[in-house]
Length: 412
Image 1 (cartoon, rainbow, N blue to C red):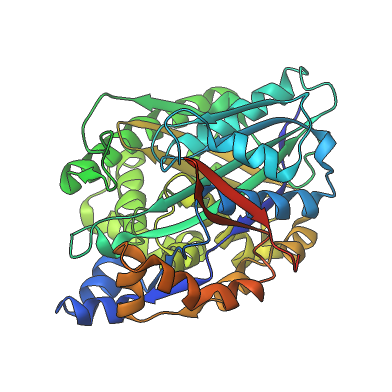
Image 2: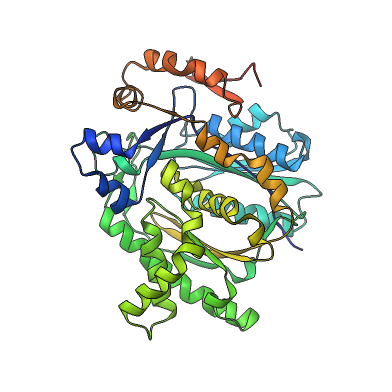
């Protein structure tokens, strides 16, 4: 049985900070961010948004795009590494906000940025097993990548949520799970101990762990593909997308994959192939990372959405290679196949409209929000914007008696 994505929804916060402004404020050359990292802007989460509201907003759009009602959902999985409670999963909050019925399985997955892929594959397997009894799965990735002010990780921040309806109605996109390549290794490249608001990162080591995982998975996926189809990965896959903690990571990743699969070539030859591939196979997937930043569990799937919007009608019957990496670490290299219905999806997705509708904030406003200072003033600064935002259906209103409070917005 085929199982895959019937629809996708995405939610991007309504505020952003320019990397040029950040570089100027930190007395760093602008090209270090724009060229060195490949980033242009980064999403900033206002006080009325959090991982729960972003997840619910993205999920609502995915359900509407597929014409799926709340009683059709039998499985709800949320993947996040920025949960709001040590016990209660984000998925439970979302379950309540969306009004999904009680006859459903609801849980949360954590495995750093790889967790979203784990959630999707769990949902695909649930549908393929036929235990779904005609129901559909709702999978959501939601995260806030937040680092300390004036830290090395600061320009790689971002936030957003991507949601998927997974079903056996797969005209839009399905996966080829028999070929998936997996990798796991116990490392400390990026972690956030209990009680810490921001993560600890060994940046160079994390990149090396990423590339080691990609090398392993590339070999494995190539072997699996040859056994299944007799074809070479570089011939079978039309486009490649990678998890991007920062945009320039795409170059490091694609170069590593090429060197792994074409060991007979030298560095200059590999570089030439990368340059030939870039405009058609790599660059179309980078818009989200450049404009939004790192959204952890959803980063690689924001790249997928960027590719879908960039290429549109060219993608029908094409294969997309997706490399998902999460620190700690876990990784998976999978292949998705694009079927029919992409144009209808894009008309309902509004990804570009969400990026374009954002409001640029100043460094002072950024410090007020991300520095956790004067939250009341920051909330007042933007509530008018939220009221006029057609993409914001749910908001966070504070904590009462240690319980997080959410409401549906009156205008939606």
